[in-house]
Length: 424
Length: 166
Image (cartoon, rainbow over all chains, first blue to last red):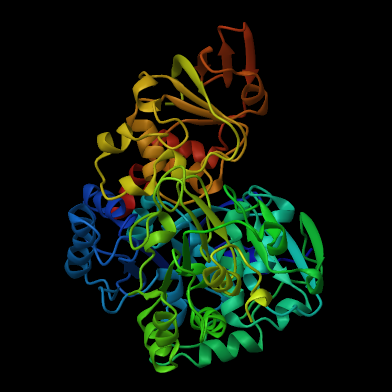
């Protein structure tokens, strides 16, 4: 009986000879990650235990991105905890404001995560790196504390679900729509505890940014990890990284032909339209045409889901020469400093500002109701982020609709949820 | 914990209770556990922290604790004095965080379907039984697998790795 790619990567990170779903393992981690919300608890635990050193200074990554640049004094203190810890224990991959970005955009861009890695992060969207053919999953602060000391993490080997996408994508449809479609089909617990393996010719032709978007939202279906087999696109992506932090290009693993899946689903991707997840669950998915007349107060384009350069290019294409509807706030947040600079160099930043939007420094910010665009009572936003839970972006009575960057940009122009074709 | 019997009142919640409801992000700029406890479950029931008495239970439907990895969620629940969370099932990061910090959690579809808000419960972790005193019913639940029991018996993950840290 063969292994899935997830099982193969997990097995390689243990001393075991065989592995199967349901088995508990202590796995070696290649990278462990924390941010300004989750790392302070981990650091407290690390110090409470009296640990003297990190298992490996090069393999612990700390990114103050959620409430950074610090939104208030308490947040500033939390960021300071990270900075002090990084200095004291020699954390090589600590990224201060000015060099930081939204963690799940930053790590692949810097070449900190490579194919075949086992990555854990005290942030639920750590599953993003599956796009590179790595096993990566979100864990908690205590797990991070333990991993920083031992270099290991306990895991239950997940069953795998296979999602096969056929056909060519329609215009204005991207990775965001494929994953929203999937979550809409299986629900927010449809992949509970499971690995979500995405494949098929649609995925084989999908650019890396879209793959990152898809794997990023595996957690919104309850998944343990999202994963895409590495291929030429992966190879090209990893080889194109300038000043890569890690050496080498990782290791490529593939699912065996006789690997076992708990479920296999096939979708005709050519029939998928731009989609919107309506409040208050990412599974409440409808074609954009069905929610066209919903007025909005704010549009957010950014985050670890859709704050990459290709997302900004799509949004700029729609906003070029157009104005954000009066009374609507457009907030564009490139996910990293590099994306910020690329957006400036390509003239995208100018397009956003001229359209009447703001162009912010990288931060998770409004995605989790942190800062840089909190919603007031009863306000409504459309956002390229990943969650639309009650009160996610601000007041508990505010509402968030999730979409791809094209739909978000078109909605900014119309002042209501809109299909890109209504604008361009 | 393995030998504990918990007694208290049930506070009932629905399906897919997410970590933003358990502890909204606006309170994540602190690691003060008592401060977090004051806002426990605030966006699902804004009066919860006032209503909950030490040793009470949270009882929910499926996928409890979905969403973010914030350990602040089980920490807030534990610091609010909740003895145990009973649900049909849990989101995976919330589940592992609870095991790691020693917040008892129980998966039981039967209990989740039958317990109503205000019911008085008695939970015996050793025998794996939930007694609903109000309704004169009892529900069995599966104990943790041996691997997790070892973490729980050590008093959480950090204690279980203590040896390796020295």
